Length: 391
Image (tube, rainbow, N blue to C red):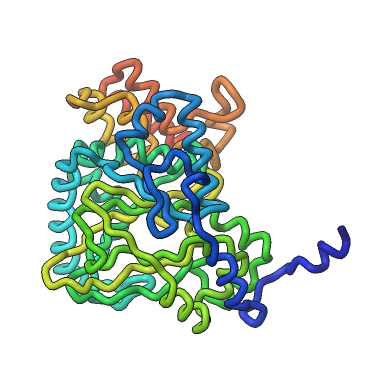
C-alpha cells in the first residue's frame, strides 16, 4: 500500500504527460452490451431514443437503471451520450431562437463583438446567461424549453438532485472556425500554471462538479461543425495538465469524431472529455445551440443568476397550468430555475424547517403551487426568504 501511494502523483505537470497514455485509453471500442438501453452506438457514442426513454422516466426503478447507465457512460465509458428527440415538439425551441436572435442583435449593437473562451472572436455570437435572459424575455417559452424531463434526468445521473442550471447560446456562422481542443469548467478554465497548483485529487474531483450539454436548435450536419469529441479521453487523469500541449492537440485532431444532430436532439458529456466546436464549412447554415453547463449543488455555478427574479417571473406561468404541461415538466422547470440548496444562509434568521436544512427557493415554489398561492403572496414569501438568507 505504501508503494502504491508513493507512485500515485500528488500533482500533475505538463512534463509528466505522455500522449501514448491517452492513446491507450482511447483505443478501446464501446460495445452495445455496455449500454443496453441505448438504441445504437455510433462512433463509440451511445444514442438514446427519447420516445423509448419516456416510460422509463415514469417508473422509479427503471429510471434509476437508466441514470446508472448514463453515469457509467460519463465516468467509465465514452464520456458522452446523445438523446435523440429530447424535444419532440420543437416549437418552443423555434420561439426561443427568435428571442435569442433579438438578444444577439441588441447586445452586438450595445457591446460589439465579444470574445469566446476557446475560439476566435467574431466567428460566432455568444449569449452569456441565456437561461435568465430567456426567462426574462418570455417565461412561458422558458418553461417549455427548460421544463424538460430528459434534461433533468441527465443532470441527476451525473450530479444528483438540487443541481444549478446555467446556459449560454453559441451561434456559429458559415465559415466560423473551430475551437481549440480543451477540457471545461472548473479546472479547464484555469491557466496552466494555476491548474498545476491544484493537487491531483482535485483534478479527479473537478469533472464530477459539472455536466456539459447542448441542445440543438437547428439541424446540424457534420459539415456545419457540431462538437468534435474524443471518446474515453475523460479517463486520462492528467488531462487538465495536458490539453494545451501540441502533441495532445495533434492527437485530438487526428482522432476526434463528430455526429450530426437534428433539431431537438440533446448531447451531454463529462467536462473532462476533450472536445471543441467544429468549423462551420457550410455556406448557409447558422449553427445554433444552447449550451448548458450544470453545476453540482455542492459547487458553485460559473455565472451569477438572479434566481429570485426568475422564480418571480416563472411562478405565474406555472400557476396558470399551461396546457400540455405535465407534473414532470413543471418539476424540471423549477429545478432549472430555483435554488435547490439551503446553504449558505443565516441560521439565526433562517433555521431548519422540518428537517436538518432550511426551506429553499425550489421547496417554497413547490409548496406555493400546491397551495395555489397568489403570485403577489409568492413574491412576498420569496423576498422574505431572501431577507432571511442575507448575512
